[in-house]
Image (cartoon, rainbow, N blue to C red):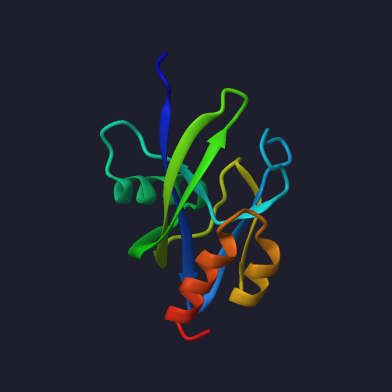
Length: 137
């Protein structure tokens, strides 16, 4: 039996002390309407940092500088229970106009405290806290 293994990236984008939160589209199969940072799969042969830049552009229209990896995560996805492991990166806004993709129906910049209250997935608060401590919030 061959198993499919997914490598994923997530990104916490920070701009002047605020965190970008994205609300998942109500048409998404998994967690519709939930708030998240943004994430995606690493394509075969792609470096995780390149995947971050690609996914950030696709999901937000922004350009970022990667500060550092801040957390790791592990989960099983979909009915097929595909195993995935991922890295969450702290990114700093560099340029661009916020333009969420169809994957999200809303995007807002919020304080770390508000981001903590919005995020619902495992490891989300830990990622916010790591960034907040680093920026003195």
